[in-house]
Length: 154
Image 1 (cartoon, rainbow, N blue to C red):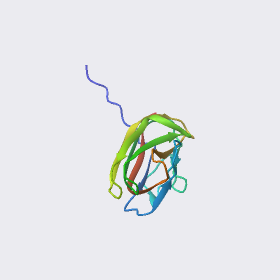
Image 2: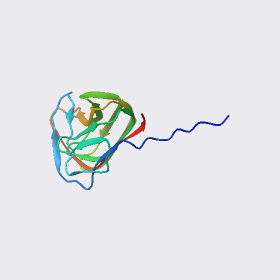
Image 3: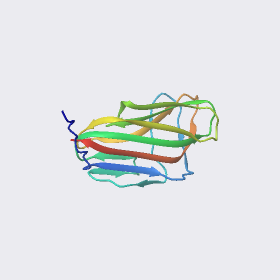
Image 4: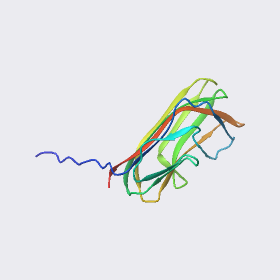
């Protein structure tokens, strides 16, 4: 019996990316996530999604199942920091889109990758948030970033 192949939906997608950024941000101490507004970001291609780089939001117009992918090449101004990066959906952490990384040495670039599937509805808002375990604020520079989403089924 032949396998039925589904046609992928290319009716909704969006991308925000950062290339060779040198602007830093200070992330306060504490267990609360801080929303990341990606400095010097650029809106890539998009369709049926609204991208707001000033506030770091992607707003979905078309309901469906989406593949979400984020890659972040960053460096910290503090050594030995446990760093959490997560995608938030309507202000709530998406538990399947979370990554933890130890930045062992300050000034060196480290990479974090996140990917997963989300069932999204029209009007849903995605953003990136971070937190860390350091006792005081930590400065981060997102040198290269690519955050993209694509609808894979309606």
